[in-house]
Amino acid sequence: MITKRKMRIAAYILIMLGCLLSISALIAVEDDAYVYIISIRTEIGRGLSVYINNGIRDSEKVNADAIIFDIDTPGGRVDAAVEIVRSIQETMIPTIAYVNRQAISAGALISLACDQIVITSGGTIGDAAPVTIQGEALGEKAVSYIRGTIKSTAERQGRNTGVAAAMVDKRLYLVRGENGEIEAIRPDKYDERKAAGEQLEVIVAGGDDGELLTLTAEEASRYDLADAQAESIEELLALYKIVDINGTSLALTQEAILQKQKELGSENVKEIKSLKDSIIEEVSVTLADRVVFFLTSPWASSILLSLGALGLFVEFRTPGFGVPGVLGLLCIGLFFGGHMLLQIEAEWAATAFVLGIGLLLLEIFVIPGFGVAGIAGIAFMFGSVLYVFKNAYEFEDAILWLSVSVIMTFGFSIILAYILPKTRTWNRFVLETAMDSELGYHSASSDDFQSYLGKTATALTPLRPSGTVRLGDKRLDVVTVGDFVDAEASVKIVDVEGSKIFVEGIDST
Image (cartoon, rainbow, N blue to C red; front, side):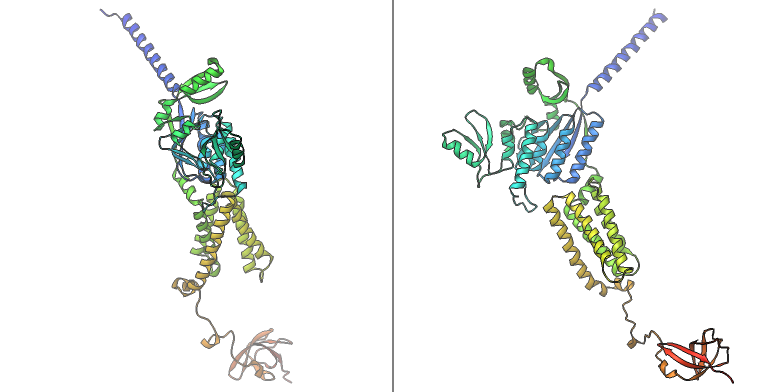
């Protein structure tokens, strides 16, 4: 028979088991790795730079174990890529670039900045030479800057700088020397070493007819640029573990961990947790991000600026304030507001633009002629727009798209100046009929007032000093030049100035 004592003991045991299971579950949850995934699947620009910086900042707030950059991009702006590279280098969270098809141009630079590079089969990485918006190669100054940037980025992560340089400068020969080392050398040095009898295996030919280095997945692994291959994020996570090396957290494959333990000693390389079955947080591109990407694209910015200027132009040409002005200000606001979200201090440019509009209005409606205020207003408006373009895009792109915007604005303004006066909508705002004398409009009476000089009239009202008199069958408004005159008194017209008649009283005696 089961006693109360036995039942109480059994209950205690069940409670203890439940507590142990709960603690074990909590430990298991806490032991799971937390991974942030940031996708780079569009052209690289300032909008994408802000999105990535925000994603890195969010991952740092929650103390994530690793950040994976899911990359499939044809490249983009170098200055935006450099900003992203700096953000990656500044974070203490282990970073992994997953080349999920292609990392070309600026995408290659971002990949090289990460601690690890994983590439999918069929993926490519490279071709990072700077080009214009038309696809033409830039000069040596730009090539030298990008070459130095990508080499220092590769060197920071312990990768072959020659392989990185060959992605930027097609004149370099990428060769494997007799000692098995891969390096990038100038054409003159290549010729010297060949002439000296050195055996050099050419990986990529250089010189004037050279080609840029673009690596496949197999080649990237062969030349130690890629650390692993994976066909999915899940497969990538299964390959990596978080380790602590002298107080620094890194994400390494098992093979790399064994190599580090061999080099530094097992006691200095401690495995913390595996990334397999990690809790994944995807930093998705929100609708707000997409709106910013759209508003800050060069062509959209040019159109917004042009439409804004056209709206203000039409508003200046019509009385009052209506739809054109509202639409113009809306487009201008979207232009500056979108770029404010790119963190380029566009609010100061917007203030300067508004000040420029104010100076133009002052010049048009207050100050006669066109002078300092008008010139200053145009300078403020143009300077503010140039500031935004210069900080949002590369210099050549900024000049190109700003020129496109100016040309569109002037072209459409000329067209509207001819078309609008002929439309019904325009005639609703503007009085089309000319009020000239041929149509019966007169600014004053057509009488010949000079003919009244010397004639006598009778005051119909007291003249103090102005009033009305009767001359024959006409009523005239007059002004006395002497004393006030009572009604019914006689007056003489002594002077006429335009339509203004002057009289004086006639002494009755």
